[in-house]
Image (cartoon, rainbow, N blue to C red):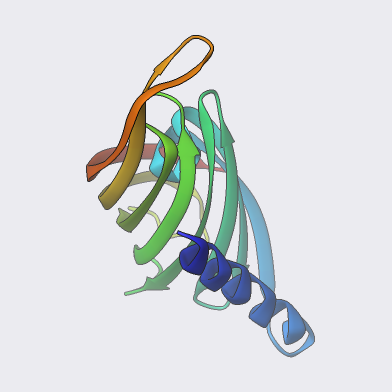
Length: 146
């Protein structure tokens, strides 16, 4: 998990060093899914050409991620890491596909699916009381980009 977080941080740093040479754009999205920190969350997007880096904060968690937008800005593939308290309080790492009917740059609705691994433990109200286990993670996402 530490290696995945280090990779995401490196990917976040690289385009910032070349920002003066390319066009960049920022936006916000509201939605549900791992990309939004779980149940319902807000996501800040930083786009540098076809590369999108984001951070999100949701009602039950948060996430960091990277996406590569292709095919007329309507499709993206990416990776997300984060944590949410309902099913992955010890973290998740997923690959994600997202579809933007109007295109990523124009905003509008987003539909997606994520798959990967999540870690959770059997916990009580005052701390861990059981073993931590890794399980497959699959989630459908929907959001609106402003």
